[in-house]
Image 1: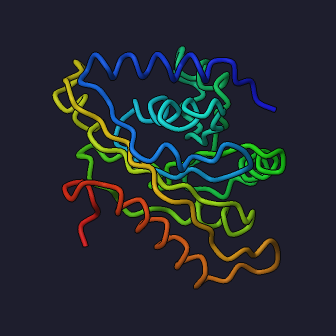
Image 2 (image 1 turned 135 degrees about the vertical axis):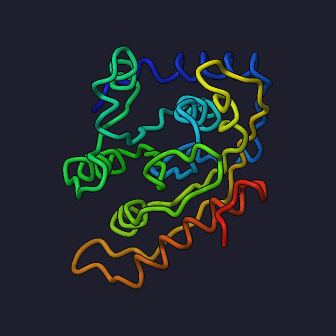
Image 3 (image 1 turned 180 degrees about the vertical axis):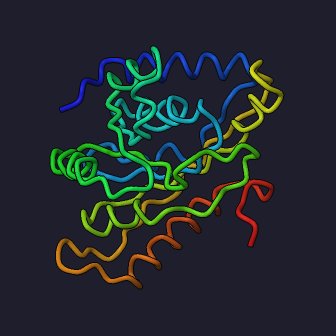
Length: 215
């Protein structure tokens, strides 16, 4: 199992920083599962999102969220070292990374939650992009509940460059849902497309209009 000792203090530090930058509000914290495996999915528009989302979800119920992150982060000075000790496991973007999939399945088998940003990259203007099918594939194969979260306001923090700006942030946590479970065999393409669309719709519904995808 991955080292996780940085997760809780890191989430708290992130929360303190965002408090100085304008504050954050969490809506729907009562919907966070207190036990058992689940897949956390959220939109992504800032480098601050992972620790802040960890604070808004896992920290609130004293559970570590094991986030998937791009492999490049592992090699970033300090950040990579901290991420590796926060339960983060790394995936090569744009590839079928079976090692990362096995890690996710092992965590779920142990009753742990896994977090992903299904867009695959952050949106610099805050508007949600189309999402990749990887999250739906994992959920269909594993049969775990999916917890959607909409993150609003973090895209404005670094909108003016390297110096952070004040921005009120909101985390809206939706109702958990599941996709049809297909643990083995050839994956049904229509089920994957419908699952991907469902995840996108659930996240988008939790966002303010100016951050929802353009229809």
